[in-house]
Length: 172
Image 1 (cartoon, rainbow, N blue to C red):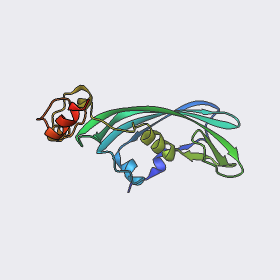
Image 2 (tube, one colour):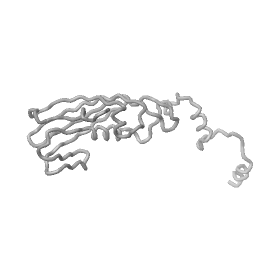
Image 3 (cartoon, rainbow, N blue to C red):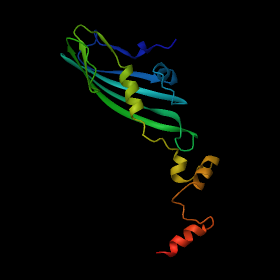
Image 4 (spheres, rainbow, N blue to C red):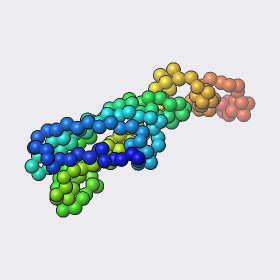
C-alpha cells in the first residue's frame, strides 16, 4: 500500500533557520490521486525549508523525466520536467488551503504534508498541449502523422483539381 505519509515534514523539533529535505516521486504517487496520464516518471524533489518564529517558508524545486503520450501522434516520449514553487505556512485558528502560495494551519500543528502541493505543482507545470519533439523538428515518422498530412488544410500541393472549384476560381 502506497502512503503519502513520506511527504510529511515534521518541524516541531527543528531549530529556526534553513533545513533541506529531499523526496522522490514515481507513478504510484500519481495513482493515489487517480491521475493516470503518465506512462512512467521519476521526479526528484528538493525542499528548502526555512523555519521562522511565526511562519514557515518552503521553496520546492522538482526535476526529472516524465514519460508521456503525445496529444497529436499518441507516441510516447520522455519529457524533461522542472518546476519550482514557493509556499508560506502560517498559523491560525483553522485550516485554510485555498491559496496555492499560502497555507494556514491550526495553532499547535507540528507537521505538514506537502503531497497535495507537489501533485499540483507537477501537473500544472505540464504544457497545455503535449507534443512529441519529433513533430516540431520533423524527425518523427509514423502512420498517424502520414494520415494527418492527408487532412492538412494548409497543404498547398494539389492532389488533383476539382472541376467545381476550378470554375469558381475563374470568377476572380
